[in-house]
Length: 587
Image (cartoon, rainbow, N blue to C red; front, top):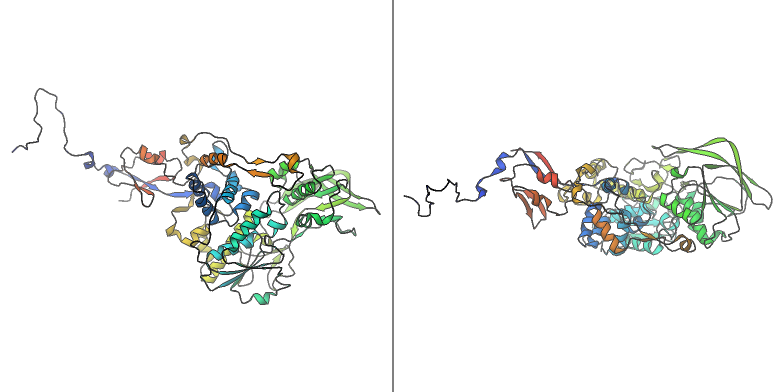
């Protein structure tokens, strides 16, 4: 019997094939040799960041107008975004994939923007004091604050001991307010303390408080930093005629250097030397004719941040490169006379050791009324616990911050390494990981490798807290520039922060950088490739010839329909951010 709805063939018309079913009956997935996989990966900026911040994820949140959510991502790894947004040496920007396209993203200004405008209640969801163990942190500089913060987030009871009358360490006593305003620092420290951290100020452990009194703690983290400047000359001059850069920066008003007719020589090429010169310039109300910085390194070798050197030169500070002090003379009642010689500097890349080499026999004389020496820092080790190993003026630890004493850990400048704020914060985070593993009886090396970011020396503390099963990012995979589909991006100039004019700023202690205004920061947020982070652009859906990309609206994740995806790889090629990759079929 012929079905009543069956088409009747008209012999006068061409033969036409007709189907009464949809094309869904053709399950082209059987043709597939490869299948797409959606994997969020690590961006090179995150890999280069000593603290290991998931920078692209924060940019993605901010692109949706969620500034608080973006700040929360930063706070998962870094307790001091307002500080780092001002003084970090931003290695992330040097590795930014966007730098291979036009200009790198202004990540440091973005971090400052989030800190200044975001509001996050960090106690929300944090198990404050949920554990019985008590941990002592000695020193409240960036390493100590970081260790205390991450351990408090893990539920431990933390007591922070600080020898000075205010917390912050070198953040407060070594970085001038024109770079790091004190209200910003106070706000950041107050947020850390909100996690229930007890702080004891004016308590020098080993002096006011013996290490025996700390035996009741389950672990101790030492982050006392390098508190003393290195001296260069032995003289019987009155106090203040020759002083260290650290002494001057700790209290510029103390040394009576306001007289702009006094010739002042600053020796050194690092941040302390440049900060000392610029602070003295402000003390003298912008009159810098008698301020000279003597630097053994060439201009491009100077360890000071390039932008700090640039700003110092804009303010009229004289910097003499390639000269090193040779001999100091002092007559009765007369200014200092200093002989200095031509010099070159060789730096050991592994140890960081510096060798100053004299070049030629030429001697130049310089007279000065006051000398500020900023050539290095040293640690006061006389108050450390008995049995702790000291080598070359630093506390000896392994790479996880474990000292020669069973439950004593250390980090920051006291153990050496790079003398930057970000690296000190990373060191404190590593100490927190090591202490957590020590108390819980876990292997710290295994824990570190599980949560390590790529092949870098940092890891994700948030990943450690949550566990890998809760995290959608493959921390071992770093997205390279050739994995970015730049066809979907247009060129756009980098947005740099506004600054006070040199003539105005050198007469005041106001912050030099004004940050990037919100409208231009929106532009900067749009410039970010968000390497390795799915941004829900759905370009893969637009290009899929089989319409086989599936989005789970509830979970916000993507997958593919195995019945129809034939593994052509178009989605992988089209993906702008290197999130989709093709793998061999396993069926």
